[in-house]
Image 1: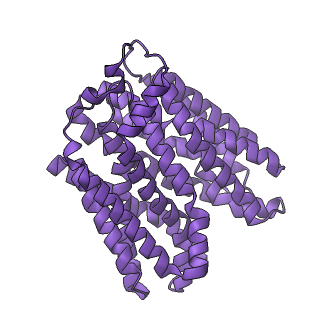
Image 2: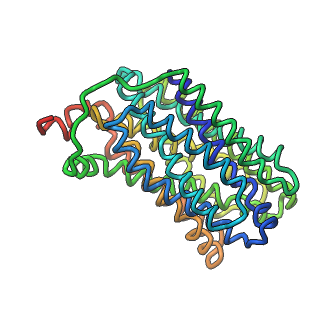
Length: 391
């Protein structure tokens, strides 16, 4: 079950990570600026972030199997329609709709994990889920890069669209769903109480998400600025960052399995990544590239725990979907601001300031988790907002 969920979630990325590979080609073919086509990414992430919250709440009351099915079908249709467009306005509308469709993936799956697994198995299972999106991104970039050479950018959308229909067939045949339960009524007070109970998780997700998104967007530019790698080879950085991310996830999983401690593992990896970035602010040359790789490895391990394992462990019965959606929303929305914030910081203060900021934010995240480390073994059901209200 966990393997099918992780695989399906990873394959969702066929319909979203594909655009980053062909943005320059779209700009050239449609006579647009990079800033204009870059708006596609902005629209996607902001719509995706907002609808993470909405789909998360809906996922508490509606069959997760149906929500994921709808999301796969919608993102397939959007990608097929996108491949036919020549208007930027139409593209922006469609890619915003894709953000809505993609939000139907993770939150409902989190509910399935929380309600189908025993609490003692959630720790182990939660460390496997991040492998899906990392491998999915790497597979998508490799596939799209291979088939969309030259100006043939449209294949980067119609091919994933067709493949996603096959993923939908796989998901439909798997038939994985949460156990049927009597749905609680929607209450605004429940959401408010829930937000207060997971406030520290939301803040940690925002801090780590800001650093991770900023690194995904701007590290190729940093490596280009070092002049250690030829400009035509910088594109390989995207694939290499995913290899580094996998190593970080493997390390995080090993540490959790051996120690049975998610919170302290997140503390250690956040601290290591933060210190790595602080050291990086004082380094240059090949040594800086090595330290950068180690910091990225630790960052991705911490990020996987912050948005997957910790939210699942702190979810009371019946609220896993909305908590996963809320935490993911924070990581996405705050992380989305890294594009222009880091760009401005590089321009006015240089890379040392960027790495110093990233290091400080990660150390702050580690401190917040460390202060709540004793909550790891508490039973979330006893803290459920719904347990204090009539069903």
